[in-house]
Image (cartoon, rainbow over all chains, first blue to last red; front, side, top):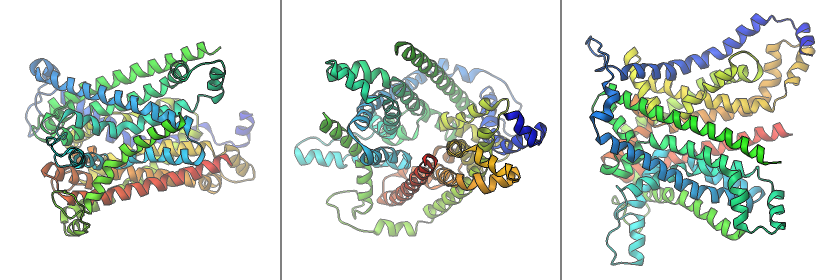
Amino acid sequence: MAGDRTGQNPPGRGRQGWATAGLLMPAYGWLTLAVFLPLCAMLFFSVLKTAPVANRPLEVTFDHYLAFVRRPYLFDVAWTSIQLGLWTTGLCAVLGLPAALALARSTYGRSRKVLLLLIILPFWTNGLVRVFSWTMVLREGGILDQAVHLVAPSAPPLTLLYSFPAVIIGLVHAYLPYMVLTCYLALTSVEDAVVEAARSLGARNAVIFWKIILPLSLPGLASGAVLIFVPVIGSFMEPRILGGRIGVTMGTVIEDQFTKAFNWPLGAALSFIMLAVVLVVFGASSRLLSRGKASLGGAAP
Amino acid sequence: MTALARCFLLAVILFLYLPVFVMVAMAFNDSALYTLPLVPTLRWFEALASNEKLLAASRNSLVIAAATSVIATILGTMASLALSRRHFRGRSLLQILLLPPISIPWLITGTAMLVFFFWTGIGRGIHAMMIGHVALAIPYVVLIVGAGMQSVRVDLEEAAMSLGSTPFHAFVSVTLPLLAPSIAAAALFAFAVSLDQFVVSYFLSTPGVSTLPVEIYSSIRQGFTPEINAVSTIFLGASTLLILLFAQLSSLGGHRGRG
C-alpha cells in the first residue's frame, strides 16, 4: 500500500529527509544551545580549579567532587534535602491517593471535571506567589496564630514560619496536585466491574482497598513520587522563604555558590552530583514501573 | 462513604486555596502589618503604579513571555510535525531528548545556562532569559501539538493531495485549520510557562534587568509589605486567566477530535 502511494507521489526519499531535518533543526538547535551545551559546559567547569576569568591558566582538578569529604557539613545539608524529599513525597502520597480515589469513585460528570480543574489550577499559578501566601498564614501574628488565639487567648504565640514543618507544608502545597493527577489517571483504569465483583463476593472496603485499589494505583503513586522527589531535592526558593536560617539545603547551597560565594566550579560539581542522584531516581523508577507492569500483566489471567 | 470522600476532597481543595485567599485578602487590607480586622483599601495597588522597579520588571516579563510564546510555538510545531508524521531513524532518541528540559530540576538547568552564557559571551539579561525560556517551552509545545495531531487524520491530507493539491498546500488548507486549537493552546501554555518561570530567570537576570517573579523574590527577602501582595494578586489573576483559557481551548480540540 505504502509502495503504491510513493509510486504516485514521487518526491524522492532524499528530499523528504531534508524536509524532516529542516523541520527538526531549529527546535533541536535551540535546545542544544540552551540546554545540552550548557550542561556540557558545566561538567567542564566542575573540574576546573577556579572559574576561567581574565586569562588565568586553566587548572584541572577533581577537588570539587571531594567536597563532601572536605566539608562534612555538606552531609547534613544533603540529609536535610533528602528528608525534605521523603517527607514531602510521603505526605503527598497520603493526601493525594485518597483525594484521587474520592475524585475517581465519588464524583461524576461535570462536577468531577470542575473539581479536577480546581485541583490542577493552582499548580499552574506561580510557585513563588504560593510560597509567599504561606508566609501570611504561618508567621507570628499570621492567620493561623490569630485563629488559635481566637479559640485559646492565653496560648503562647504560634510561629511556624522559619521551621522545618513550614518548608514541608509549603512543598506539599506546591506538589500535591502532581500526585492527585497521576493517581487519578491510574485509578480511572480500574473498572467499576472489578470492584463490584469483589464486593458481590463479600469483600469489605478495606480488603478492596488493599487488594485492588492500592496495587492498581501503584504506577500512579510511583510516577507521582518521582515527579515530586526530584524537584523537591532541587528546591531552593521554598526552604529560603519558609525555612529562613534553618532552611539550608543542597538547593540553597548551590544557589549561594552562584549568587554569593561565586565559587562556580564548586556549584557546578554539586549540581552534577545532584543530577547524578536525579538520574538514579529516574532509572530506578522506570525499572520499577516496567517491572510492575510485567507482574500485573502476569497476575491478570 | 461517598459523603466522607467528598468532604476529604473539599478539605484538600481548601488546603490548596486557603493561603492564596489569605494572601489576596491582605492585598486589600489597609494595615501594613497585616493585622485584622480587614479594612478595605486600594492603596497598595496605587503604590504599585508608582513603583518603577516592579513596573519595569512586569514589562520585561510580558515581553519575554510574548517572544517565548511566538518562537517556541513556531519551532515546536515544526518539530512536532516531523516527529508525528514522518518515520526516520533516531526518532525515539529525539523524543527522549525532549525530556531533560522538562524533568531536570531548573536549578541545574538554570545554573548551567548561567555558566555557559557567561563563558560564551552571550551574557545575562533579557535576551539570555528569552533563550532559556524558549528552550523550556519547546518540549511542551511539541507534546501539546503532537497530541492534537493524533486527532487529525492523515487521510484527509492525502485525499487533498490525490485531488491534485501539493503537499504544502494540503497541509496549509487541511491540517493547519484542524490543528489551530492545539497550536493556540500550545502558544498560551508557552506564554504561561515563561510568565511563571522563576528559577532560570533568577540566574540569568542582572541587578538592573529582571522579571516580575525575580523582583517578588528579592522583595520577599527584604521584608514583607502588602505591595508584594498586590503585585502577586495581579500576577495570580493573569496566570489563572491564561490557564482557564488554555483548558477551554484544549478541551475544544479534544471534542473536535472525538467528533
